[in-house]
Every structure is written in C-alpha cells, then in structure tokens.
Length: 464
Image 1 (tube, one colour):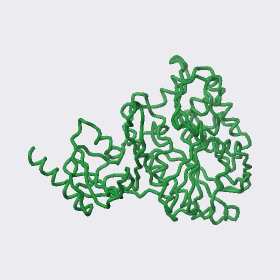
Image 2 (cartoon, helix red, strand yellow; image 1 turned 45 degrees about the vertical axis):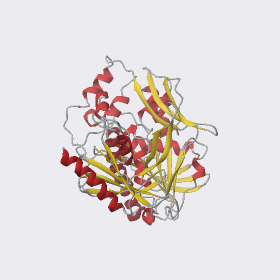
Image 3 (cartoon, one colour; image 1 turned 135 degrees about the vertical axis):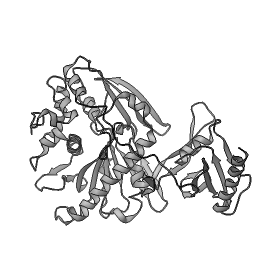
Image 4 (spheres, helix red, strand yellow; image 1 turned 60 degrees about the vertical axis):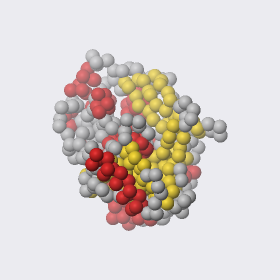
C-alpha cells in the first residue's frame, strides 16, 4: 500500500500529510508509518485517499494495527467489517477504531500556535474532550447494536472500541482524564500539601457524574458503571499516539527533536513521577508506551486483560460492589510526552505547511459552564470522613455541603468564588486571598446545613 504518492491535489491534502510527504524532510518518520502499514489490507480501496485528506482516523487505524502486531495478535481481513477481527494468545476479540474529532465550526487540532497554550485552561480542554469522547464511544456502541452484533463472525466475542481524541489543538495534554470521566464517572484524587516540603497527601477522591454541553444541557457520565453498555467489553486508548510517537520511533532525522514528559515510578518502596527531557536519538520510547485498556465490569463477553499485562500498559477497571475506580499503573508507564521539532524557518516544506494552516479563522468555542443559581447538586466523592458531597452556587459563592460518615451529621463550607468541581473548591478554600465561611454547628440534614450557610452569605451580602 503506497501511502505517500499523492492521489489528491495539494489543496485537498490534510496539513499533516502535506508536511510529512515533503521529500527529504520526514523520510525516517515516513519509514515508521510504512512499517505500521505493512500487512494492512485496504478493503474498500479508500484508505490511501482518507490518509491523505483526513489523516487522523487513518493514522490511528495504522497505529492500532501496529499495536496488535506487537501484541502478537493475528488480524483477519476477510470480512468488510468491523475494522479488526483478532486472534490473540488469550482468545479472539473484535476491535473497532474511532476518533473524537472537533465539533463543526470549532478549531481543528492542527490549527494552533504555541501562544494559544497560555490562553488554554485544562478544565476547558477536559470538558470538550469529555463531550467528544462520550459521543464517539456512544456512536460506536449504537453501530454495534444496529449492525456488527448481527454478524456471525462478531457474535459471542469481546468487542473493544479503540478511541483517541483529535478534538482540539491541545488534545494531547489530557492523558486519560476525560475518558475516565466518560467511563467511570471518576474525576481525580483529592490532594493536599503535606507537612514536609514538596509532600502531597491523597485525602480522598472527586467524582464527575455529568458534563455540561451548554447551559441547561447536562449529559450523564459513567458508561461502565452500569449494565447499559454491556456489549462493549473494553476501550483501548492512547493519547500519546501522535506524530510525536512517530518522531520518537524514527530515531535519527534531518532535524533535532526535543522530547519532554514524565514516566511513572511504581515500586515497593516508592511511588511518584520521573520527569525527562531528551533529544533524539537519546529519547527512548516504544510503540506501546502510553497505551491504556479500560475494562467494562458489566461486559457480556469480558476481554482477558492478560494480553496487556507486563507491557507498560495502564489497566483501568471498576468495582460495582464498592463503587470504586481501580487503576493499575506499571513502573515506567509513559504518563505524558510532548515534543518540539526544531525545523529551520528557512525550510521550504515548513514554510509551505505554515502557509496552508490558517490561524485567522474565527471559530466557535465551547460555552462557559453555568450552574443554576441556588440549586444544591450531588457531586459525590469523598474527603477524609466526609462523603455525600453536594455543591451549589449562591450569590457569587460556591457552597459545599458534606456528611460526616462517622457522626452522621452535616456541615457546610463556602468560598467567595464560583467553582465547578470539588478539587477547585478545595484549592479556593486553601487560598488566603479568597474569602471563606464555615458552620460552627453540625446539623441533621443537608437541607439544614445548606440553609444555614446561605444565611451567613446573606448576612455578608447585606452588610456590603
């Protein structure tokens, strides 16, 4: 399969393809992609055109094919669908590829400049990706029900959706955070500073049960926390599968590339993060680095996770009995990696690429999150002995009402800033520049605690 001989005119080519197809500039990277494609079957004779025009979905499919080969899986291409019919050392399974792309009218991932990163907020990146990943997974589940499940070669086999985001310019910063929200309604650990310099203590966890698409439209999360998506056995994911992955595997090249990132430290005596900065060819990275497999505990046909063990692949799961999200991170796991290619500005291919990627287009943006005023909302999670957490916005304040699980009574806190998550509330409550309030008494119900903390806010507002 000849990926790089143009089959469409230059104006129809995707910017990424147009760059890597320039003669002499990306030869080592092109070699990596050709290796990924070795043995891949173009069953509908559209793949090369799609690779050159839309790029990302085809790039992801080639990466997946290379991963399955690396995992010692054989692929049966004798059927037109789904994408991959696989036989592994641990049994047969079906895999379908999809990508989460930018919404119509929003900025595409390739139209970016470094200065935009300073203006980007991580929570906005996560919210958009949560919405787009949720849509991508849901659409593939619907496709399975309406089509794939009726095929004899699919029935009674684990069905795996392979998804990755290309939904916005800095999609690669999110790791698996958005997808974990989508599948397990889990947000993040709650962390406070320890008594020693640089020490951090995990005191609980925050949950995320819904995402706001726009004010007034809340979409429920937690697809793998109930049996509704039991047809899907697992999700395969890698947010490190980008052109930086290709550059890392290419080794030597015409121009320098600097890699920045972090790997997990997981041992009997230590848990932490090891940061790195390296220039190729000194940067070491494997094809499977950064991969995640996210299991569905309600799957009708469970996927055997042994296929992914011992491979520096993160394995996610959920225990319905305890409502617990579980994550197994192997030592050396690639948490994050970005790269910077130092291509001279005089390089004709680079000038041509920049000229083809407009940055003056006006794009739509995700609406800012807005909560209904004075509406107490369940957010769950746990912070030390406190659980059954609820939050609300009231008169410019954010209220947190919690149950003491030991004494079974309620109390409330408030900060004079609008927060949209438990971690942000904790951060604001620890900020000396932000006013805060607390109740001196413990009350029998959350409603009583909520009313009591509102009275304190009313008193302050009336004084001012």
